[in-house]
Image (cartoon, rainbow, N blue to C red; front, top):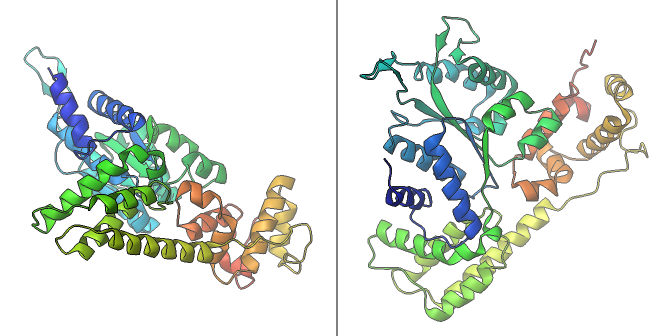
Length: 383
């Protein structure tokens, strides 16, 4: 029987020992702790970069392991770092580790649910189509057979996934399977951004200072009162694009400036000015340029015949959208710059920085790629 004290300790562990004051976040963690220990169904963690999805996933695994619900090391798959062929090649090894052990019976001869392995798919949105299909089949059947053939075998695992994208939007774009989302999103939790957890800025500052002092074997790291007030005032209004990751890096720079002494107001002023300068540079770099009016024909005229045929087969909605995308691509030097123009607003809400990949997937819906749109690719057959 798990006591209330043990449950409270697990919640504290999931929060990395930080005494968070945001009521909504505390309720979220309490809910995650409850479901992680009572349900073996998939968990999907979503939120902007730097909100702590990966760290939370690893701690959920530790809580499950402490409760003897999972065994062995966490099987970690970073989908964003792998090409599709690499992920496909990895799947046999991943699921080989999750083969079901022989059933164990308790003294009453009733089936006993043995601990399972746990798989973490980070950046699940980057999983390519064939790998998505393979994962879906495993979730549907509880069995795995490599796409290259071989013996089929039963698997047993607990799944946790993370993404900084809106997977419902990816489904609408045609880049993520709706049926797969229905499986992996059985329990879905959205981690709030730093701007939505201002009550937790001070507790996180204290945590990072303590962590830095321990790492560098310092007696302590702390602010002068005036310096802390100045930093808190700035932190509550600053746009932390990478959320807690940005806050952590800022505090580590201040600790470095202090060299084992207290952080002064002048150090804070320099750091705040530097962050503003970096923010202005990013805004200038990411500044959107409005694409040409798709109805004007100035940017989409003289297009290759195969693209014109694709446009002719599109519904009006898709045609207008695709014309605008093609116009932005043709006036851009690189796929990355085209992506920044096309996703200038949604990327701020989603926290995504992989605009090239998003554009690539959109074009692929119509059988197109960057070279074809720019006019240097080969004609594609859509018969």
